[in-house]
Image (tube, rainbow over all chains, first blue to last red):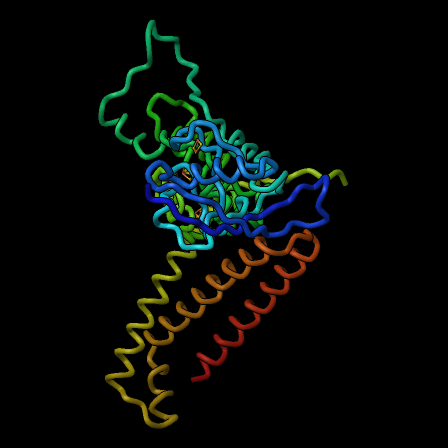
Amino acid sequence: MATSTMQFKIYRYDPDKDNAPYMQDISVEVNFDVDRKLLDILTRLKAKDDSLSYRRSCREGICGSDAMNINGKNGLACLTEIKDLKQPVVLRPLPGLPVIRDLIVDMTQFFKQYHSIKPYLINDGPRPDRERLQSPEDREELNGLYECILCACCSTSCPSFWWNPDKFVGPAGLLNAYRFIADTRDQATNERLDDLEDPYRLFRCHTIMNCVDVCPKGLNPTRAIGKIKEMMVRRAI
Amino acid sequence: MVNRILVGAHYGLKDWIIQRATAVLMAVYTVLFLVVLAIVRPDSFEAWRSIFAHGFMKFATFLFLLSLFYHAWIGVRDIWMDYIKSGGLRLLLMIATVAVLVGYAGWATQILWRM
Ligand code: SF4
Ligand code: SF4
Ligand code: FES
């Protein structure tokens, strides 16, 4: 059995008890035969101290709930290999959003921005008998967009989102905006572009590309943002 | 005033294009200027002056300066929009920025045509 001890430094804050957040040093026995991902270790830590709070659900990179800042970089605990982690492993909540408790942040602002781009198909045409069809080529354009799990790793690593979370849609919202702009079944392309032609909503993005660096699903919000800008240019000239 | 989140000014694309276009113009001018320097190799004030005495150089330099000031305007305004939360202070800083840049543009043009 390959066991060893791993060192952790974890951000702790319980607003009911603590005056201020603090970093807790804690070590845990790891069994490398069964423990693969950071979430496995969090489960062990929680067994040791059940006041430690974090979100998780699917434990396989689908629900997007266990996003956190791991050794300075946002990622999903359930997809992060423990073997690759430098010790002590520093865990913090996602930056830029209000902390509710320990590693749990308040995602209200993030989802407000997501909802603001109308993340649903708009088509006032007559309803088809079955589904609305697309050619395989048109469908191709949605690859790399529809896979977004709304984990917020990208938006909370974006300085522009830190400074203006109430006004800048952020990489996740903009990637999803482009998912509907790119959809040939959607009829609201013009309205969507109008809505984003705004110094804050879209043009706060300064192509810093932190978002691309952290996306655990390997998506590229910067490219989606570039394509929105390109469509605006094509519409304007 | 009630505290509402105000977005929807619906501008930004034009500035974004101009920022890119002015960057290209400045890059082209930089290459041109280096080539001219390599050819003329000015070693005296008169030689420097002769570079800008040429009509084409005046035109290109003027274009470069306008690009520089417009580019600076968009960049500096973006900084104010990112970091200055108070609307009044932001407007004040924007006006100051425009005033300084327009002043510089006039001054630079005057110098250029004196050469
Ligand atoms: S684009 Fe990637 S990082 Fe951003 S919310 Fe979607 S899945 Fe998460
Ligand atoms: S590329 Fe744009 S959206 Fe992505 S991190 Fe940078 S500023 Fe934010
Ligand atoms: S627990 Fe669902 S994405 Fe990690």
